[in-house]
Every structure is written in C-alpha cells, then in structure tokens.
Image (cartoon, rainbow, N blue to C red; front, side, top):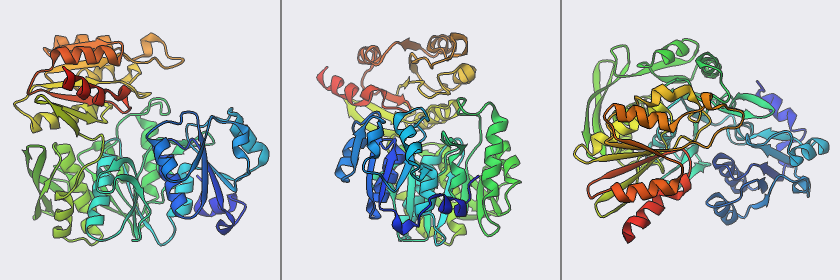
Length: 483
C-alpha cells in the first residue's frame, strides 16, 4: 500500500505548486464532495463525467466548478497540475490514455482525501463495517458539532444537520465513512486503507461486493489490514456481538473497546424500547449505568450504532450530557428511513437498504415504529451483488414483518448467466409461499400502477434501493395527490 510519504513524492511537485486540480468522474457523490472541499480550500477545480445531471451537476455549478461531458482527451486542456481519478474510470477511456501520455501526476479519490485533508494535526475517526456506516458517521459528526468541536467530515449521505455530506472543519477530528470497496483501476485496495485511522468504529463484517471480493475470506483480509493501521495510542470501538468482528479485532494494536448486547462487551445496550419513530435505551459501561439516551430513529440496530458513538466519544473526552444532547437532536440522514411525504393517510418512506441484513433490520425498525399499520415494501435489486444469485436465499428470509412485498426486475449484469443472476420472480414466489403477498414487475411504471391500486389510508410504503429508482418516491406522492 502507498504510504503518506510515498504519495507526497509521487506528486512530483510541492503542494504549494498545485493550483489546478481536475477530477475524472466528478459527479459521483464522494468525488463531488471532494471537489467542493478542494474548491473551498482555494484550488481551481474542474471535472469530467459520463453522466452530468442533477443533483450533482447543480451542486457543482453552484460551486463554480466547470464540468465537461464525457471522457475526452481535450478535457485535460489547459493542463491541470494534478488529476484525481474516480473509481468509475477505466484505463481504456480516451481521457485516461491522454493522462498517461501527458504524465500528469494523479491520485485516487481516497489518496487525495488523505493527502490534502488528513494531515498530522488531524485525528481521523473512520467508521467501517458492512452495515451502518453512513448513519454512524453522521451521528458522530452531528454530536461533535453540537458539542462545539467543529469536526470535518466526509460521508456517503447528506447529513441533515449540515445539508451536506462534507465539511472541512476547524477541530482536531475528521469523521470519515470508511468504505471497503476498491479504490481505483490502478489501486485495487479498499478505500479505507488510505484514511489513516486514529480512532475507528467497526460495526459488522459480512460478505458483500461480490463483483470485487470472491468470498468472505477476502473481505476479512482487507479488514485485517485496516485495523492494523490504528496506532498504539488510537482505539477501535468494535461490535463484539459479531463473531467475525471479534476475530478481526485481535489484529489491532490500539485499544479495543467492545460494544453490543453481550456480556463480553465493555459497553452494553440495555432497556431498548421503541418510541414511535424514535427509540430510548440505556448505555452501560463496565457494568455500571453510564446514562439513558433517546434517539429520533427507530430500530435496535440504530441504537447500537448510537452506542458505538457514545463509546468512542466518551473515550475522546465528551461528557454524557454532551453526547445525550447531540443524539437527541439528531435530524437524520437523507435516504435512511426518511419519510418523503404523506398523502391521504399513506406514508412514503425512503431507505438505502439493499444487503439482506440491512433489508431485514430496516423492516424490523419500521414495524416497531408503526406496529398497527400495513407495511408495503418495494425493493429494487440494483447493486452488483444484489443482481447476482449469491444472496437469493438470504433475501427470501429478509422480508419478515412486511405485509406485502413488491420487487422490481433486475437489469442483468454483463457477462452474468441467468443461473448466476438474482431472480425477482423466484423471490416473489418464495415470499408468497411464506404467506407474505408478493409481486414482481418489469419496471417502475408497472410498480406505480400496482401501488396506486393497492394502497389505502393508513398504509406505510417503504421503498428500498441504493439508487434513484426512477424518482419513484416523488412520482408516487404526486400520483396519489391526483387520484
């Protein structure tokens, strides 16, 4: 892996001589955030992307960042001092080939974030794990902000307290959502290996990202590398309810602070109770009550995310009162159990869940929040993993608690046979066999027609997808208003 010193020499010029930075793949959520941070830091920023459209195109335009459509060689004129290459970029693109010809210094997005913003005066707080990264990172950043610590952050979702997914900050802490997905075509290691963790939270480890990892063992190898980066004076807050996490934390040289529900956890979640769209719980440390907390989010899994935040922030010096205030005032994260609207007594909820475990936990949380209402779940298998057959059986047990399930047909992956692809029809048939009415449809229009015919006052319609899903939330609400 490239060290910080090697990165600095790789640039072939001192940082003060870098003025113009160009980002290839600029319209991705993380790349646009990095572009905004670089612009705020005084650099001239430009970018290119294959798909330039709102909302990122609007954000970049408001920021005064020029964006070119397509990956063309002329995008590198005038010649930038540095190029940041997103992980959507391939070596065969004309712009990439021109980059090599011109021998312009280049970095990946995670390398650039580390190089420009994670300097020696900063203590990165990296949230890693298969599930809960965005919510936990957002909780961390919000509580630090409410405690006047002025944190920087770089997160994969829009944090409502800031209306943004990034901030440079003035304090010593920088919160980062640490993704295990690979970095770039020229750097096939997990992104979080570039984030120089001083403190970290590790929520869970399961198999995911079947397009880049062959099996769980490969994922575990990447997480072992990650926890080894935490220094002796740092700390790892780890969910000891997860046996794979227990195995991995043995490789950390820093302090390991366990949290969860088990007796082997230094921090324990107790007395959890649902409270409408929120929850209450008690945090116990070393067998003693640390405090009672409320969280304006449903679900035991979110209470556990909050417990991890409590454990880490207590370790870095925040008081129980500061943490309690920050958690209680948390406004949420866009696309995480977000109520998009209500029409005629029908509530539409948006959630990012796509892994079977995330689907299961989200439905459980929504059932706790609305125990008496009919819950209709709409699921779009969209990720490279969910469109493969690898989780077919797992999905068949993930929708317990739903009163009805609607599944969109997949867009098949290239070079994947029907036998290796996820089957929406098979999922619907299996759920119907369990007594959960389920249907599958070829496209979003057909789903909207079905929902308009089926939905009735009092229903909750939860839409689960990691993508835009053809703007189904807004379209459904508008159609219901007119019906």
